[in-house]
Figure 1 (cartoon, rainbow, N blue to C red):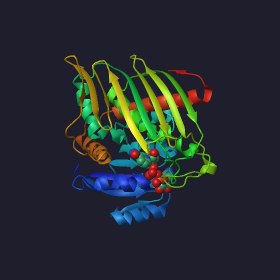
Figure 2: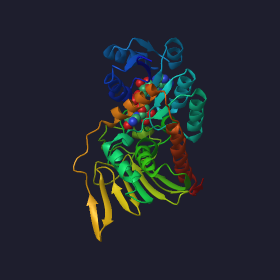
Figure 3: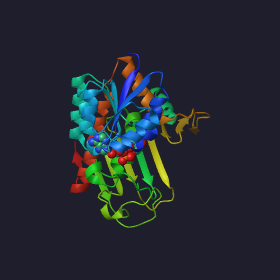
Figure 4: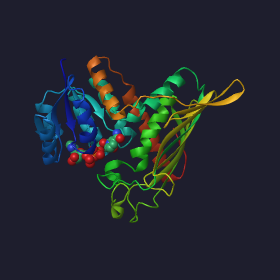
Length: 346
Ligand SMILES: NC(=O)c1ccc[n+]([C@@H]2O[C@H](COP(=O)([O-])OP(=O)(O)OC[C@H]3O[C@@H](n4cnc5c(N)ncnc54)[C@H](O)[C@@H]3O)[C@@H](O)[C@H]2O)c1
C-alpha cells in the first residue's frame, strides 16, 4: 500500500474540524479520496475547500464506485451502524465517531462485522490519547496504583447544551449527556482500569433545565423539542470487585463552566487525570506527584494518526471493537435502570 485511501461519511462539524485536518497533517501517508453526505451541497463545499476529488450524496454509491482503504464515520449516532457495516463489508477499515452506536445490540453487530471482514474498527475516544491519560497508564502498568478498586467520572457542564446538530434529539442520538460526553470520561476510566466486566448498574436521569428557555453557553438550544436527559448519574460495580460512580450533565447549577474529570483510587496510589496529579503513601508520608512536564498532545489528531498507523501496519487488533460493545452495555444498563428504577444485573 502506498498511501491509505480514505473516505469520509458525513461532512459536518467533527469531519471538518478534526478528521480532515488530521488526515491532511499526514498527507505523505494518506489521500482523502472521497466524501459523502446526505446534504450534498455541504459535502461539495467541503470537498472543494479540501481538494477531495469525489463527492457523493450517499455512502453506498461512494463505497461502490471508489476504491477506498479506510473510512471515517462522522454522522449522527443513529446512522453509525449502517455506515460502519457498509464500510466494513466494502473491505475498509473504519474509524467511527463516538459513541459507538445507539445501543449494545448495534455495537455488537458492528464488532461482528469487523471480525467477519478482518478489518479494524476503532472509535473516536480521543481522551485516551491525551498525554495525562498516557502518563497515568504508564504509572498504572508499572504497578504504582496497586489494585484500582474505585473510580469517579464527571462530565458536567454548567450550561453547555449544544445549540446545533441533533444532540438534544433522543431518537437520533440514543440519549443525552451520558451517551455524548459522559461516554468520553467513562471510556477513559475503563481504559485505565483495564476495561473490567460490569456486574451491577444503577442509574438515574434528570430533565430539569433543558426543557425550559435559558442561558446557552453553547448556543441557544431547542428547549421545546428537548427529548434527552440533561443530567445522568450512575454507579457501576464490576466483576473484579471494583466500583465506579458517574455524573454527566449538559446543564447543572454548579460553579465550573465545564468539568471533565476521571479520578481513580487504588490500594497503592490514586489520581485525578485532568490535569494529572497522583497520590501515594511513601516512607510514612502522604505524597502528591505532579508531572513537571507533559507534552501537549492534540488528542484528536493522535487518535486519527494511531488509526492510520494501525491500518497501514497490517497488524490490526479487535480490542477497540470489543470495548465499544462493552461500554455500550454499561450505557444501556444505566438508561434501563433510570427507566425502571431498578438496578440492572449483567
Ligand atoms: N470525538 C468527539 O469529541 C466528538 C465531537 C463532536 C461530535 N462527535 C460525534 O461525531 C458524530 C457527528 O457529529 P457532528 O458534530 O459532526 O454532527 P453534525 O451535525 O455537524 O454533522 C453530521 C453530518 O452527517 C450528515 N449525515 C447525516 N446522516 C447521514 C448519512 N446517513 N450519510 C451521510 N451523511 C449523513 C449530516 O448531513 C451532517 O452533515 C456524532 O456521532 C458525534 O457524537 C464526536
